[in-house]
Amino acid sequence: MRVAVLGHTYIVAANRGKLRQLLRRGHRVLLLSPRLWNETDFGLRRFETETELDVETFDCPRHGHVRRFTFPRAPLRRTLRAWRPDVLLAETEPGGLAALQAAAVSAALGIPLVPFAWENLPLAGFSRWTAWPVYARARRLFVGSRGAGLVARQAGCRAPITVIPQVGVDPALAPPREAPFDRRPLRAVFVGRLDRKKGADLLLSALPAAPDWSATIVGDGAERSTLEPQVVALGLTGRVEFTGAVAHDQVPRILAEADALVCPSRTVPGWAEQFGHVLAWAMAAGAPIVASRCGAIPEVVDDAGLLIDENEVAALSAALSRLTAPDLRRKLAAAGRARAAAVFTDEAVARRLEQALVMTLERSDVDVGL
Image (cartoon, rainbow, N blue to C red; front, side, top):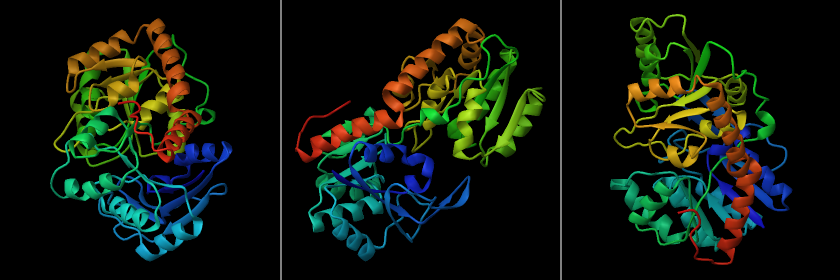
């Protein structure tokens, strides 16, 4: 199979694991990516070197804006015509302009189109209208969660749907767990952008009632200016460390040293957690999880963590108190490793992707995972 993959996610080399696994399974892969991507936390990113995949990079107008960026039309069309893929996987939200481009070029060249959608809240306005031609052209739709699949159905998608992680984890990059289960004090780790929807403030508010725990806040964002004074106000000085943003490849090591990953995301207007890739890394690293029931989190975590309602500080404190028990942390760590191996490794994602693409080319109308 010759698979062309279009999107900005793979500007980061660490995100390409499933594509390399497709190569190992005997397929050809062409990666079509912006050359530059302006990211809020990391600034201007450049496409990281790739030695295995076929790659074409482009200067994309409005890069950094997921729904508004576009590929240069003529070069994109020339590349796809010359490479002759069997299928075009457009891993950019159907309500965005790049997905609309992918639908148009796939129609012009007669290439089956498979878009990828994360959006798990109802589409409205411009995004809903832009998504419709993409859905109409899709041979199959990939979604990152069941909620995203239901949203696509409500927006008019009639193509068969497969629920599949967009990006896997490489277990070789997850070092052996370094935190002994019987140590004190315990360390909770938060990894994510520091804005209200990710809920780092909730972890800080929970710590006074969980005296056995300290916290490491990994990430950066506008809310840091309010989180640091919150630490002082709550009397947590010395129990909370801010690392700032770190590179993707540092996250597994941080999680291997953690006693728990805390992911207290909250729904805000226009957003609910769409996956939480750090959850998959935590499972692979054997870090127990405490997370809110926000968006797709419950279906990602399953039995590998403790789930609490959104915005419930007392419930978060109680969950951390439960996790002081070494046997519970050991049980959740084992469940996480097993779940990561079965569902979230690059190899597992590539295997599922291969099956779904075969179904696409065979014109199967079966939904998978909804």
